[in-house]
Structure formats: structure tokens, C-alpha cells
Image (cartoon, rainbow, N blue to C red; front, top):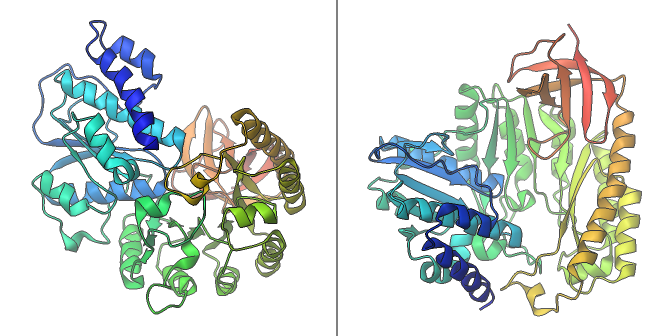
Length: 476
């Protein structure tokens, strides 16, 4: 098996270092991963304190927050990515999306396993996508882990820690983000057939959460100070189709928009094929739904979209983008693309370049293709060399950098409503409604002659712009 071959070579090296008298220094040099999570203990162990370490995407973060909520609801002392060294149980929530993410997950597991062998922690539990996808191989290769859990085994994990799954805590999630912003996962799993993607293997079929449950959670978050909800799922646009065969994302948006205290609702991870046009009317009508849409499009060549099993052509994609921009004026569109999928010829790449130049996305990211076993694309030869993949990705990002600079320069002199997240390096740092946390532009306001409260909104006039940052002053 592909992973078994890859993992075996990696863990053999690990075990050689594991028993090396030089200890952790040799181990760190071998795996080349600077962990920010592990702090070695110097004191005696404190019983029954759990530290949850999250890798990967915001959907994993929500899963960790649900685990944290359940543990605390069972009166178990639990933290998320604690900077202290008091936990005796570590839960690692892994990512298994692409090779780099899998490598980071393996590195993190091995570091905590080493800490366990050194006597610094008692138990190591692993959950999340990597565990779901490769549990059988991982159990054999890293037997020092005390238990492995899949992506939908929260009750079993709680039972292992002598805790009960409390249904009354559904909708009462504790968040680890700043109080003013929270992710709201509206569905789990995915039914899309994308040839390159292993998410359905790790997350299962699409399951929408009930609207009333989501509204209850939104109300709970709002009462605790949340002002921004970031709606996430593997595919937002599929919401509701498993409950009666009708897409009901527009109904959900209306209900969430009515929640008192929620100022911003933003949409991440929409799918272009079968896009529910009725959500555009709701976005245009409701002031607290951000004029923002994250819609991964993956390529600008119809031939490549066909190989990727995306169910849409470039022409239909461009028509959709034009409709979105017409119905929701000034909307910010974010997308992601893949460079180097099997069969990508130079002409396909040139079509993607033309697509990016023509569509002028507000935000754009590029992945180099990762050859994932158990996917349809894995049946193809991974015939684009790694250096060509990277060159193509760099070319796209260079083009996007120029587009982003031009678009940001147009914002100079304008005033925007900004939500402030943090203070850093002499600046208050915030975002407009056109920017999602962690991945998009930020607005920097000099702290020396401006004052804002973190978690609050302020009107900011932009006086300077760079490719990915805006600079402004608060208007009194």
C-alpha cells in the first residue's frame, strides 16, 4: 500500500533515533519539524488534564472545540494547544489532506510519542482525518499511541477518557478563536466526485445539520460575544439536499441573519456546479451577510476540469462568476486552484493563466497537486514533475500578486467597516467584510495615534495599500 511504504520508511528512521543515546536532539534534526505544541515537562504529572492539539483546517478546529466542550461538560480539565506543561493526556487532531499535511501530522504524533516514552505525558490519543484514513497502518507503525479514532467517533473517544457524550451540550460549543469570531460547521462529509480529493474517504457522505440546531448554536455564540460567523463545510452549497432533496442554504442564511448580535456572516467552501442561485438574493438583501464568497474552482481549462470530475466547464464557470458579480455588486471572490494535476499540458496551464488574468479574483491561492491514494486521480500517472508544478504555482501567484496590488490600490481613500482581531507590532490588526480570518487581507492601523477595542468594529479610512495589506486611520 502507498502509505504503508511511505510510512514504514519514515518510522524506521524514527525508531533508530528513538533508541539513540543522543536523544531528542537527533530526533528533531531527523524529522525536521519545529513543533510549537510540545513543551517538555519538568514537574510531576498532574492527573487527568487533557491538551488538544489541532492540525489542518477550520473544520478540524470545530471538532476540537466540540471535544473540549464535552470534556469540560464532564468536569475534566481540558485545554486547547496549551502553552503550559501540565497535561498528562494529549489528543492530536490530525489532517490527512495532502502530503505536507500528512507529514506534519506524523511529525506531531512522533514528538508526543517521544514525550510519552520520556515519561513526560501518560497517554497519546490520535483522531481526525489521518487517523480515519490510515488507522490500520498507523496502529502497526506507531504502536506507542494509546488509541486511534476516526472523524466521527467523538463518543468513543470520550468513553476512553471516562467521559459521557452529553447531547445537551450540542449547540453550546466553547470556541478557541477570539470571542468575536467563530466558525459554524453546517454539514459534515461530501458527496462530490472530485477525482483528486480524499475528503469523502476521510469524512464520509454529506450530512447537513438541522437548521434549528444551527440557529440555537448561533444564538449561544452571540450571547457570549460572537459577532462574526464563518460558515464552513466541505461543500456549503449542498446543504439541505440530504433532507428532502432540496438545497436550503438560503433558508439557513435567512434564519442566521435574524440572530441578534451577529453582524457578519461569511461563506466559505462553495461548489460551482449546481450552485444555488437563490443565496445570491439573500446575500444582496441582508446587510449582515458579508459580500464575500470562497469558491474553490481548481482550474481554468475545461479539459482539466473534466479530468478532475468537477461537473462544470470553464465557460459555465465564467458565466457563474459574472452572475454572482451582477447580483451581488462589489462581492469579494476567493478561489483556489491546483497546478500540476496528472495530464496537465502546457496549453492547459496557459488556459489557467488566462482564466486568472480575465477573472481578476480578489483572493486566490494555489496548491501543487498531491497524488493521493484511493482517489480516482491516483489511477493516472503523476506525470508533471514536482519542479514544474511549483513553477506553475509560482507563476499563478505572481500574476495574482499584481492583480491584488491593483485592486488594493483602488481602495486607497475609501472608508471601510473593520473588525479588529489583535494588536501586533505596533498596529491594531483587523479585517473588512471582504476578508476571512487567517487567509485573507488585513487592515493595519498604527497604534501610536489610533485606539480601538479588540473585537469591536470601527470605520477606517485607507491611506496606503500593499499586495495583501491595507493601512488606515480610525475615523472618530
